[in-house]
Length: 198
Image (cartoon, rainbow, N blue to C red; front, side, top):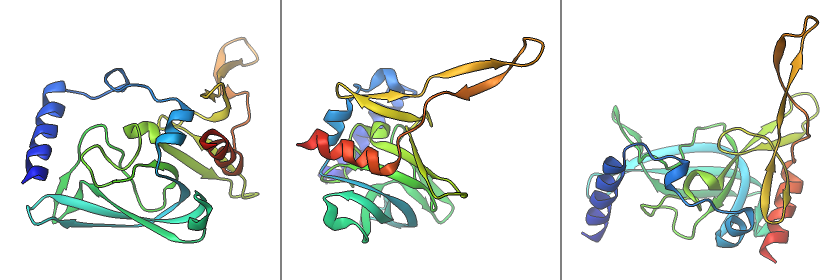
């Protein structure tokens, strides 16, 4: 009964608030993300299975094949967590502001102790979600945040993101944006997580 009340309150709050954006959620620093997380995992989403709880609400069990983790004992395992929302029987339920995952996604997730809570699986909602892109040529990885902005480092507990610059073409007209810094790879990103948790 408590879950139903909490769900209804959350839905009313999200509806009343309208669009949930960065201005309505407190920004969490990288150190805070790292310390507040029960588990930090990196890997690929290998399955998402939706079902209904006894009250008829849709939940999804997300399974990630873990390639890097804090704690390290999770490396090489399939880590599953359950979260509110999903798609089942031509019906979909999502709470605005919570991350959505898809099979095949490469991710780093800063997970809470109770990912199936109404606050979602990740610390700071979307702030606890990072995307991993793997190069098809050499297997190298890059990390980007929820807005797909490349993460290039951590300074004074804050993430540094790549700046973009405009490269003019031959006649001086802007040809497009290029990234001028190199993004962190999964290994250095997870090392920074471990350092922040010390």
